Image 1 (tube, rainbow, N blue to C red):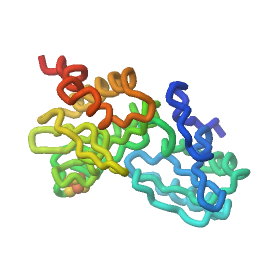
Image 2: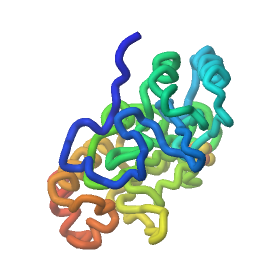
Image 3: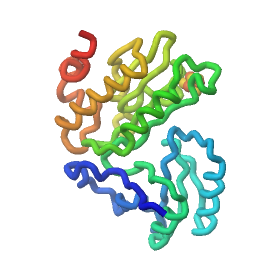
Image 4: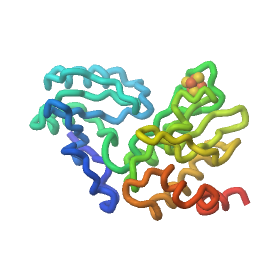
Length: 242
Ligand code: SF4
């Protein structure tokens, strides 16, 4: 069995957050009772390999899990793995860990969009899959979430997430700096009528600037507040449309 690829190994600068005894290197999250949850990466929560679900269920049974929990990041967590079983469980799963902890791109959520949903106006599955391949697990100054919605119903909370895109008739709207948590914040409109390639280009610029200039644990929205939205736009997307 090949060695598991663990995210969050790219940039040591951002690997000193207190994770309360989570085992970052094993993608294992401490539970109340001292056992761990592990959550394999499932791109966008879309499962086309049905045997994979069977395998996950078999692993949950074999290692005496208490539950399989569908998470807000479109994963399925195996809850209740004993510390000494974590490596063996990953071996049997043969899947990569989702970046559920640490300072990194935690999740790229996307909705069914024009692939499945009758309301879809843009291809959120295509864009989300591309962004997931490129950014999932990338180390950053703070946790960073991405939500791609196929229409203005915004089922992926695209205005309540660090980087969101929303499908409209003529392209995607892009929002930045949203978050939930103790100090919820709405994302701000960064661009409209963007193609998937342009959305990716905007995210490239934002991540470069954020990574180089934000403080550790400074969420994107707080970073934008500190430097100013106009300044942030000047430093990121200003050159893209000239
Ligand atoms: S955001 Fe729109 S396209 Fe996506 S699932 Fe919701 S209704 Fe469907």
